[in-house]
Length: 107
Image (cartoon, rainbow, N blue to C red; front, side, top):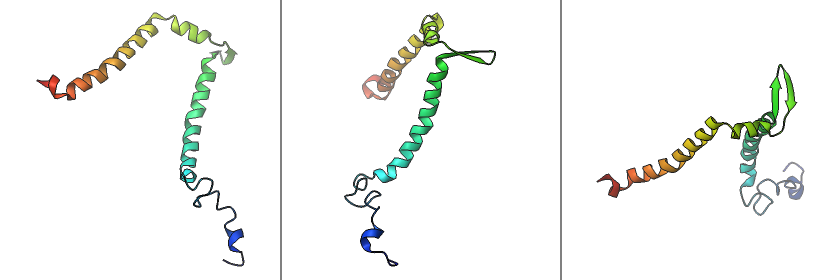
């Protein structure tokens, strides 16, 4: 091993996939990079979305207004009707799919 003893060559290997090591028994050493990448890809837009939803921008100036945008949203009749329509679809579509694939309903 090029002058290194066996112990010093594998000194850091317990962390990265050696059997019985910190991550080796669960395969986390291979799953961790994509999980961290996905978390960053989804976390940044989500944090940015929440930040922007608490602000009002007018003429290039940004003003923090707190929950005022949400208050006006939930007082809007069109938004409330859209939520009702979406909830109806959320409940009805799975029922219709089950009815379509069940032989008893096809007769």
